[in-house]
Length: 174
Ligand code: RP5
Image (cartoon, rainbow, N blue to C red; front, side, top):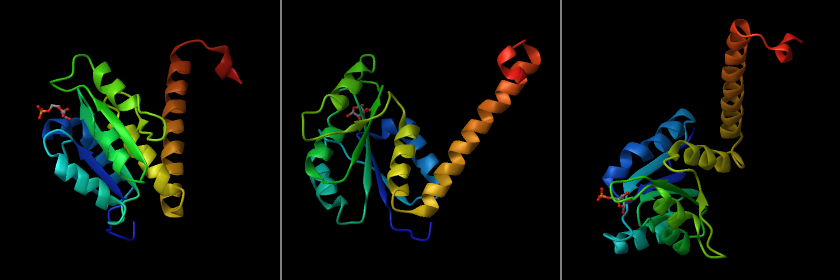
């Protein structure tokens, strides 16, 4: 990408979330999209959370990816404080009972304050959605997403071939 200005903010409630949230960063690097990554805790640093959310759009961010576990209030509170789209990543963390607590805390937002919630621990998918949003106004990025999807398709079709070679399947004889 031509600019180093971060377009996506990746935030998480604790450094213990990083092993999951780094997947968002890795895929954004693959797409060559500038991002910033930091810890913002809704419960332990509420003033920092307020400042982060209320300055995000003005600092040039276009999307925020927020991950948290357990009583996972960070994505929803960030969404309440900014006009930017917020993608929530529920994390099965040390204080999470089984992951459902994180999923429901992030998913069940009230009308008017949505958080686009991905699957449990699915930070990679959060990164892909964020890239797709950037791709709506950046042709360079949308071309990269298109290539990524073609690669996904090819990798499955390669597996189809190898399965067909080993196992009889009329569907693949055409
Ligand atoms: C949440 O509590 C964080 O997002 C993290 O998932 C969880 C546990 O945090 P630590 O106790 O590991 O710092 O707020």
